[in-house]
Length: 170
Image 1 (cartoon, rainbow, N blue to C red):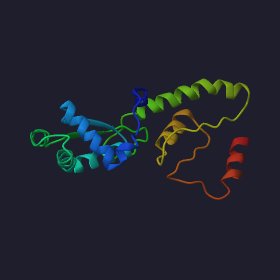
Image 2 (image 1 turned 60 degrees about the horizontal axis):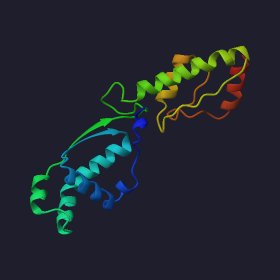
Image 3 (image 1 turned 45 degrees about the horizontal axis):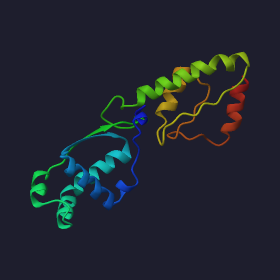
Image 4 (image 1 turned 180 degrees about the horizontal axis):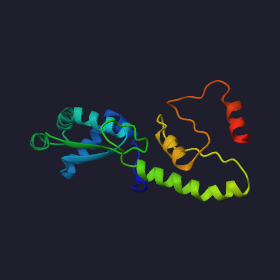
């Protein structure tokens, strides 16, 4: 997955001071184009950075960290945002970056434990990721023939425990 590159949400970037440092770093390295791949947090942060860009450059100039020529030279920051989320919860695309590989891993895990569950006549519970979206749970449950699935979009009704026990006993 994407986390293999070690990227994560940066706490300091959530502050204006952190974004000011990021702007300074980009100007120092001559970077004027960013490709941001992420979910809601990353893309919201990228949009805020874009909105603040000219103000950040002005503040850097006022503090004497960059000169007026740099403010003019780096006046435009181009950002391309790509949805990278295993949740597959973004409209306008069939599947977000990360969803397919997450589903693939889930199917591999189910395949690996299925024979153990069958041979020992045991019930296994599998929890998958997905913050507020049940896409991975639903699609993997369909693909693997799960008897029961919980998704945030359709919370269980009162008494679900009894219904589930009956189903599993069958």
